[in-house]
Length: 636
Image 1 (cartoon, rainbow, N blue to C red):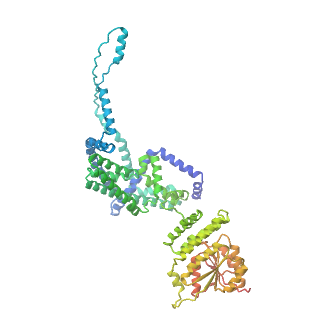
Image 2: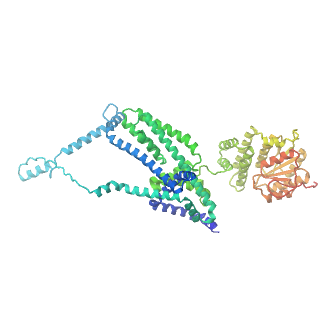
Image 3: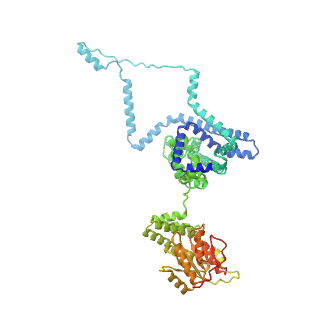
């Protein structure tokens, strides 16, 4: 009862948006607390596989967590030390590259003449020198001369006074120097220590943490909570592991490439490329710009910068176009557009750390949308693939009058699924949707005619490429190996063109087994239908009826045929109702239908079974799919 109340409250169209905006506001104003917590959860997901690996080797959990944490800190410290040493060496040599940069810029801007940059620099130097050499007095010389002339005295020669530079020397205490040196890093060290402690406790007490989460959401939601948390953990762990391996490989390739090109500090560029690539979108660009600018400043020629551009271009293209789609696959389950929009949102909310955490946080939202019905819009907006049924996609193209797109879609589907599935899962539901929309006046006559025409052209194209079903052929073949006697099958459309199109689909399905379905359409009245059936003398009649319209017409047609032909098998196809409408089927059987079928595949199997000599009219055992009855022994 409580769960149903919660579900109804969350499904409220006003309460849910207000709750979401309240959560966003809370995350914005409490970012200083939530950001270290989110980072701790992310790191615990990243280190959990290593801890589990040691536990499977019979290590104590506390020892495994401490060992993994120590090795991680040592590895990061070693990398930081190497990178710091190379950064210090690079900073000391930066002034040596000024002349090279100015020469290249001069050659690019105005080859062979003084550049605008040189002119501006020369002018600034001259102005600065003049200002430093000018005398500074309490009054300007012109002002002094004017004052002396007014008093009748001769102006005295003004002797420029030399400017004395005053320098204040302070001798800070040891505490002040320590505070100045360590102060900027105190906040970082404090947050880092807090994150480290949280990660250790999360790894040690992960079972207790899972129990608390289940207790928080209630015992009635154990299955939902467990599945959600397990999938979130699996996706994020897999993503982080794969992402880390890809970035490490990327850094190794860049470092080796820089060494081969001859760019100094190859280890530095490789480490920066690997580390910066953990920051989505911005990191790879920065990792490319830094070595490019350095190669431009360091080398006198242009060959090395061009090689740096080529190296990053080849590696990034290989990763983004080939390796990452294959290796990642459906690791995150989030579309590329969803990740981009989410990165913008999390960056606005939490800054640089939000950009770093954007993918894991977005994965959590996508999984919640998958399992929590009231949050299903997250799965729809962020999911890797649009959860749209094939028949809806096909019908959308028809409503948009996109004939080429609709035919191309069916051609692609025909390459991967059997023809019977295309008919039952795409074409028949599409025709049913068109009938339903036309009955509600949402589709006019021209649009309905367009749908029928395109479906007819699709069937024409499929007839040119017949599909021989081995299962159908083996079912049609008798046990003694002799070919079965073909049955004359007559198809009758109960209402309109849509019913006739479905009969054309059935004709294609039974054709590989040696059956020919003759279609009788454009008949003005049921009495005329009865006369045509009498002229053809078929052994089997299939009446096509496509809901939601035409049930009364189908019942009347069955009643007239049964009154005239007492022993003639009458199969009624109420297409598209895969669940089976017991009421409609009961009404059809009640007026004389031999069997009511709901799919073309079932109708194909029924016809083939009759061709083998199977009983066409078994006694009815209940209502549902394939409902049948003993034919009524009545006279016309």
